[in-house]
Image: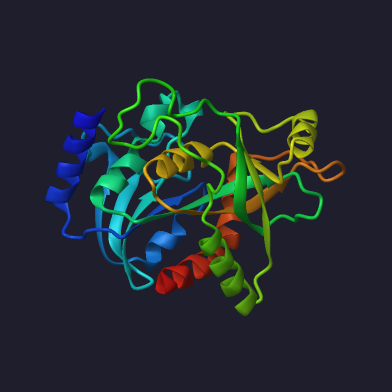
Length: 269
């Protein structure tokens, strides 16, 4: 993998002039933040050596380099999922590439289903912890250049970034929750009993991404901030038929609040 990583990084560096300070991963229906990136330089995933290609509607499939919140950023407009058939090392490969490109922080967003009865559709949840039920991306031989064999995960999501996001949300009267994200393989949406199970084990939301990317980032020593937009509810009495199109629609509606928080956080880094 190391040779592929260096090859991919070298290719990207030959195509863009920007050295990013912050990496951003945009989830389902959340690609609109990319419109705020100034002086953009873009590369389609299909053109990048060793890079996977997103197959999911709502994930455009390109890297966008530019200026956002006073920082040089690289944004993934479209991520990869285990349910697409990719190996976990492929799913998380872009995070390693962003580290080699020079990022010092990683911001992650996703659309998720709320299992906490206090949550409503369109709410934002700042992730403070996760329960990963997707195969761990660090399984297999470890290259010490990437980080330790057994990385500590006691402070997976950066406490100072969480506090900063809360302060910004409060200043703008944006309702936010702090909670635990449960990562599952998908691609089916959950059954009522699965929703109940995720709540019992300590989850507040459930989704099909994020945790593997965060695990790899933490192994490489990258501080992480992550936020979910609640696009559906897995709460008894509030469960309705949900579609991918509906998830995208609600995500786009709530995205402006998320974008405001992230952009102001970048200004403070």
